[in-house]
Length: 339
Image 1 (spheres, rainbow, N blue to C red):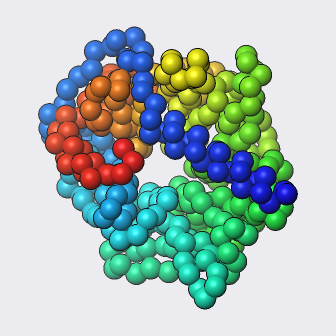
Image 2: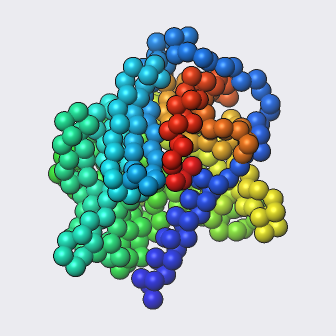
């Protein structure tokens, strides 16, 4: 009975993330601030031109990852003909990790694989010779130095959704001593001393259960809740100096869906716990400038707007639309299944 219960909760969690992550419409620009149009990367400062990001899509073609810099001088495509649920690209852009279900005789284990994007070399770096309904791995994420990969491990026999860490070459596999039952979408701080995860929690205003953000130490032990509002949150990211985190938060739709979910984009100071709303758009963080003063993201002001790439200062000023990516994005997502 425990096994069935954890599968249900895990499936519900993924369903909620999928719904809110792809189907939520924003309610327009938070304060109708002016958006500057940038038509060429040549007008960007040098630091921003070298900022790297990646896009991920799935469809009938399989799964594709496209890596590039804002100046579009570095462009690289990774393609697998099968469905891949999640990938992450190393900070230097030279490798990536992904999880994949395999078949070995009568069992179907889930493994994590590392790929050298220059040579095409692949190798398994984590996984167990157990069926996916016994143990599963998800949400791989590189450390800031690219040497380790942190990921979620679901053990259906114990009902624990915990964490593990492994070196990029497959050595040093370590199961973290998590002391909370749900740790999804882990993200390491730049110095690897803290981890942010999605965790089970309650909205302190409504008392309704949902998914909040928790801060853990490097061993996976609970430190504190970072949020206490809404039904869920998008993946959180540390700023390059490790002093702040940025994340999205979405609220419960009312009246059986007659009112659309609300969504906000926050920056939070980890020392003071002060939160500042930057936007109320539907968006996903793509990266930061090297200084950490600017956030790169993909988003749209409202559900009728096309998706585009933007930059905003971490204090919420100087919102810029990188219009020279618009045609590329339209073509990139034309055949995507989940966009």
